[in-house]
Image (cartoon, rainbow, N blue to C red; front, top):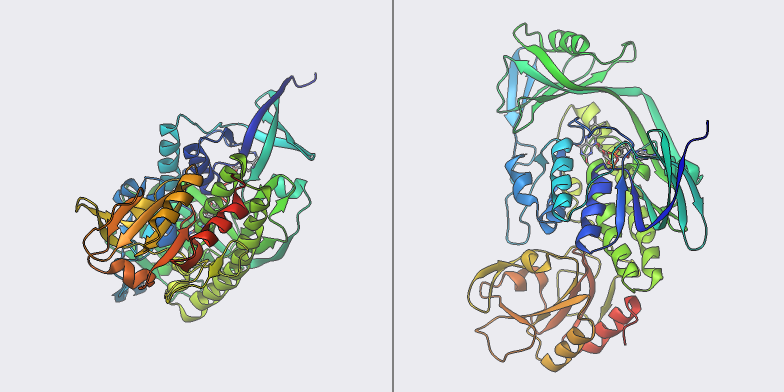
Length: 517
Ligand SMILES: Cc1cc2nc3c(=O)[nH]c(=O)nc-3n(C[C@H](O)[C@H](O)[C@H](O)COP(=O)(O)OP(=O)(O)OC[C@H]3O[C@@H](n4cnc5c(N)ncnc54)[C@H](O)[C@@H]3O)c2cc1C
């Protein structure tokens, strides 16, 4: 009997996969009013803690999407690691010791939170826009042509044909999308490097530390408490001679052998898995109207906790570009997705491989600034431009820092508060060309908001919003003492920097993206 096929429906964007990458993209498109669908082949939402290290840059994205409070409520910052040799406590240390919140960095270190909680939070946010994930809906065929991507979705015993202007393969490391389009996934599988992971309850262990036993000849074992639940994430290296699938019994045996303790009892597992280290990335991020993002484009060692985080950044980089193009921007903007993200994936593979070796060799969990993803920059991208830039610690392509300041009425406000939302933001630091600012603000009003930031008491009124940098935090983070313009992209990176007299060049930059008359 033939499978019934419903007629093709049309959608602007079809997202395949509802992991963190697909969900971030979905939230970003939803707030832009883009007509999209997000489909997921699993019949239930994932329950595993998997990527439990949320990096500061991802927290900034979640702040922008309006969910950071819930995320912080369910996470742990500065969780100390307690190291053991068998039953002997060797010491405690904070892998993020010395990192503190600063005016320009509101989230200073890695938050420990189970991946399922991040996904749950994003689904709840998506529901605010009236959108839900379509479970039990699997992409099974793709046809590309110049104007559309035509897909077949399998839903139980029926198939649906969906035509999309753009499709995103956020369908994980085994990506059907990537394989269907014959995109290369070069790299290695480290067959000898396996990790058993799972979520378990543990009787006899306090929840104040990430407990690690790293001295046993068969490898490390660790139990990390997961906040707002009774669970610990279990992780254990698997030696080459160890056979068998992960089970509660195996986890218990590993704990008994490697800790030397008899009082730790594991029970109530909700997720058990065996992870094989793969270090691979695509040679392209895009084939025509199809884009790859997240694990579909890059997989690597979990050391450094960057897989989920890099998927989040992929999605955040792509979301505003898709939204812009569907809203009239030049289609060439979409070329910059691969241009900006492919080098990031390449460097990520190098960093995580080095951290993996370091963790094995030194038995240490030291984490440098690189894993926080705050210094990641798109300098050198065709979207990063400067024209007679003022003296500034920043360059076009850098992350735009946060800074506390005050609004016109003296209320405290953060730069990140004014960035929040789907638009570009033009910051005019001490500029006097109010007429020019108003003209650009008016011309690009659909895509741009303009703020002037003064150092002293507020003076002349502009049509645009006025803020006061009375404590000098903007000056410190951005520089530009004698007047400067910073054009901030919707994903929080600086697109353009110029001196205050160059309002025309801001206009030219925006014309490159939008052909507005
Ligand atoms: C043990 C372990 C520890 C980790 N630790 C960390 C960490 O600390 N920090 C970190 O950042 N990362 C970590 N990671 C990595 C992190 O889990 C992944 O990078 C992350 O899940 C990738 O998200 P994604 O959305 O790109 O893909 P996924 O989470 O894999 O989601 C892809 C989704 O697509 C669906 N799908 C697949 N094919 C189809 C199809 N044909 N049709 C419809 N749907 C489909 C899948 O069912 C899946 O739900 C860890 C991973 C493991 C295994």
